[in-house]
Length: 411
Ligand code: PLP
Image (cartoon, rainbow, N blue to C red; front, side, top):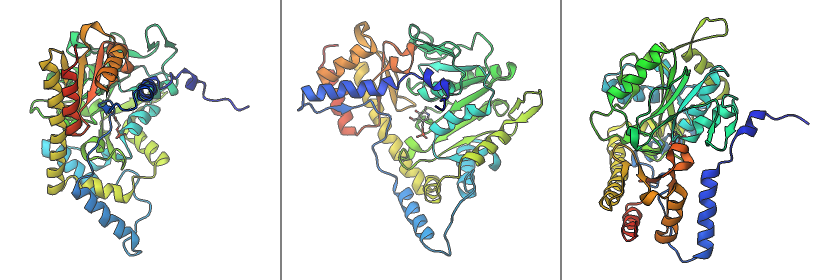
């Protein structure tokens, strides 16, 4: 028989969400009348902004007509969208990005998952702990992780950078040589951000130590505070060391529509097996154009409409809606004396479980006593043990109800 890629056998089952579903289903079978509220999922609940819908309808009409029909488009994205991204997300903030540095895709999950394949299999990978699992699993598939250690809940060849209340969720620099560093800000799951000075420390480190930062900024649109960096390219020298990932998923209800983009600066270099210098941008362009045939025209028209004056106003109101939920959760929990993090510049609230409960024990308590589903922090990594994630993506009504229920618990 044909052999499989044996690194796949090192993958741990997607234990977290299947275990949540299992416990939820069991509870519902035993308590069929319970009105469960989910603050666990990372999916959005508002509809698409009107400007997006209008633009997508118009684009469909264009495609219906042979005179304005479009088939395959540029794999990297249409100029109208790339230009709108550059003008609004970068130029307006004083950052120069060229059009051949932007790659439009069908999601940041694919991009943050695929980016590793242009680097050597020997590359040493560092991740924050807790972590968005895609960074780890895609490196497991590629054979960079080594074996999984059930005792430590970690892969032996991955460098984990613990983030907890003790270090204010600011990871320490790696204590050994690494090649690729995944940083996610605003962070999923902790909802925390870095200051410009803290981010500069990482850029300086990457420059001094010849490594590349993979900067996942999928939640950038939720940043509320003025001094929080919105792009790693706000930091001097970042163009030489960082790739940035952005998504329209959470900002504009695109989780189902699918559109995102990745910025790979022309200055970013790596070396081939003979020590020759290679532009990472050329490699990603090659990979992208070989394996991807572009995001649909209709979707890209919808995404471009986000940058129109009406689109911007509608997006602002969606972000405001979710961040109101975040504030309700944060303030509600804090008023009960719980230690809460995040939720200020991100739609995630990360709380320390009360009375030393472990993450799953708190999950069971919330489910059985308040009929609320959240996400146990340990599911994102060992440093998430004793923490719990709630999301602000629910409806306002459910969010208020959920906090009311938690208020009545004895914690
Ligand atoms: N990056 C992070 C940190 C995320 O939390 C998510 C989605 O939950 C993604 C990327 C994926 O985004 P997309 O919907 O663009 O694939």
